[in-house]
Image (cartoon, rainbow over all chains, first blue to last red):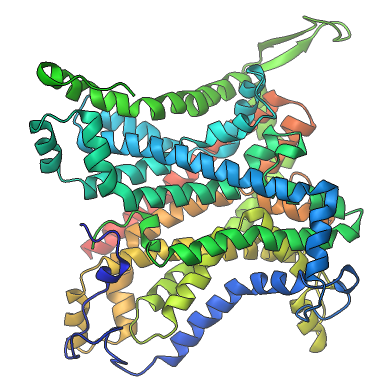
Length: 304
Length: 310
């Protein structure tokens, strides 16, 4: 139950009949299965293909994009990046900053709200607990479109459309985040500790901060990441809410650039370079974070 | 958040605390889920009546429309067309994506397969790529002058289809969804596989079962609950496809502005300016999603319980 943080302890015990205690598992317990390995590697290459392509394409000068072989690199990456930076006084970097702001701040707020709600649902027995949880879960199933139009109209009533708040606020509550928060809190917080805290005279708020939050932290990191990616990838809501391109996140900004490219093909190079620079931060984040955080947590895994 | 009182009144604090902790989520739920849903329902039963030329204040009033918006939504050929397109698209995406996710998860769970941690990360990677950017990348890879696939077909003297029109468009669009969604579903299934007790396989191995037999007879039946869950979410996501066709649209003439039901709702509401009709369509869409996913859930439940009693 407490093996949440370390992926290493979750490995299955070595198969019977092999030497225990050998690092990295038993060395070749049986021979490598060639065909399955090939299939898995092929799958991995398929997933890397568009990323590899955008890496190459971003190095091509505009004149080569549609003329040289697709995977032949050029030497225009520096020029492409400076063209992109120069485009409309660096609006691209403004979109990037906006995305970081929406996703970062949104995910922090979302994690706090989910931690509160998940903790309450896991630790307390009170009237309306299951009803609250079930109503929250139907939110997971709600198509965003049925929400987006009235959200836009209500924001318009409140005179809030085309503001940072109009994109930020509707994404703070994540029903899936609340669900994960409850699961992690149930798995990580022993009730005896909460009781012991009460006997010692600690208030409920102090127990939450001092006992629950540290124990839930691997789960909270997961909720943060999940929500960060969800907001970073979001397109529909900012697309509907925003008119002023100074407030666009990356996704909407690149979309408008691509749309203009239909009549101005020279912009395609900027789109491609922009797409590359937009995926680098998240890929880097996952590469770094997977050293001490397990992907399994994303699907609500709590058992060791 | 109020500081719960200490000492004699602590039992009151314990009683009030959960409501305090739930307050932010509750307020946000009312403001950004319940209220918009209620408003969408209200709009769907109303229409605008214009007096005279429709100029000036008070010339437009909202009046009760009954089921008018719903009947026109249900008889709208554009909506029907978009629904059929998305059903066809979903019929490709959901089985292929979940089949691949299950296949890769089983390979990751097999000790004799190499390069597992590399493959796990590589296949998961598209999850971190926004749908809009995925569509940009694949969209360029579908263009005749850029596409390596068309290049290969050409090299072998085969005809080069237009990947962004007609029948091939379904495959092209499905490919983007499969590429983006397989990794996340793979992780969900793989997590379920790893939580199974290892003793189950050890016994089967001692009995001489091959890895393939273990996968088919033991592992797959035991992860059915995760498969149902991923299935459920995939259906919902597929019916709501919006970002990818919207992004591909500028690159081709083969995608109408009402390609998917969501695009139809968007164009009704924001291009056509009829928020009442768009709300009715959105409600119909939500109900259809619920009906379809619950029907499929029931079928799969019946199948699983039958399998268990056999």
